Length: 95
Image 1 (tube, one colour):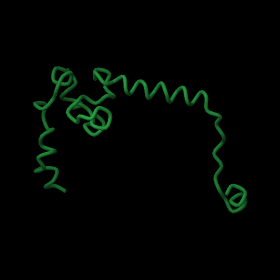
Image 2 (cartoon, helix red, strand yellow):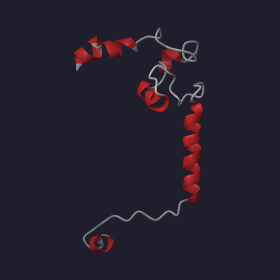
Image 3 (cartoon, one colour):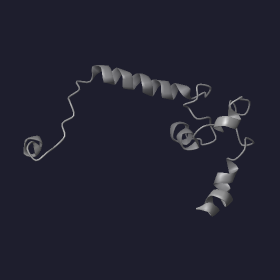
Image 4 (cartoon, one colour):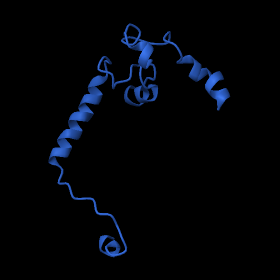
């Protein structure tokens, strides 16, 4: 694991700030967050070099806001039922 962490081209590529695109390249937080999560950027934008969409400065931040808004709407409209833990007494009733 140490060799992968220290010698891997993939890990070493993302060390530092030279690889960053805008808005990360000129951001005053780049030395703190290093552009956010590259896996999340890839999942949500298709490009691991993009800014993490969770960041409000990301051009793709709207994807996150849409997900938050959708979850809030769904929570309001859901007919929630209480969580019932199975035990030996109710197990057959719940199956």
